[in-house]
Image (cartoon, rainbow, N blue to C red):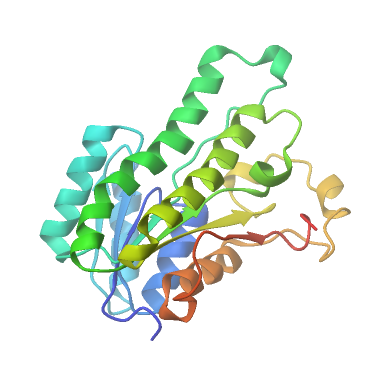
Length: 244
C-alpha cells in the first residue's frame, strides 16, 4: 500500500473533502489523526469507519486557526502516534459577498481560518519532520485562488496565499527532504457547493461535470506517497480542466 506505516494529520476532516482525503489515505494504509471543530458524535463515528479499514485513527477537537491549539494538537498527535509523516491542511470556510457588501469581519474570518491555520500547523510539524528527516505537507487551496471569482475576494485571497506560502516552504525545507505541494480543487460536490447554481459552472468545465471528494483525495494520496518523492512546490488543479 502506498502509505503503509505512515501517519497523516488532516485538519477539518470530519466532512467534505477532508473526510474523503482521510478515507483514501486510510485505504492506502496510513494511520489517521484528524481535527474537527463541531460534532464530537460525527467525529467518533468517523473514527470507527476508519479503523474498520485496519489502521489506527483518532479525532481531536481543535481549532486549526488558533496557534496554541495547533501547537497542542501536534504535541498530542506525536504522543499518540509517535510521528507525523504527512500533514494535510484542509480546514476552510467561506463568507461570500461582493466586495461592496463585504464586512471587515467577513474578510478577517476567512483569512484567519483558511490561511492562518496553514501557517499554524506547518509551523508545528516542521521540527518533527526535520528530526525524522522527511515529510510531505499538502495544502488544499482552490481553483478560485488560481483564477479568482466574483463574490469571493476574501476566499480567493486566502487560497492564493496558500499557494505562495507553499512555494516558499518548499524552497526552505527541500534540503531537509520535506516536500510541500498544493491541491487546487475546482467545483467539487460538497456541503459548501450544495447551494450553488452549478449549471452555469458545468458548461465551462471541459469534463462537463462537478468533481467529487474521492478524486481530490486520490491526488492527495499521490503527493503524500513516495511516488511523488521528486515533486515539491507544485500546484495540481483537480478541476476537470476549468483552469486551462
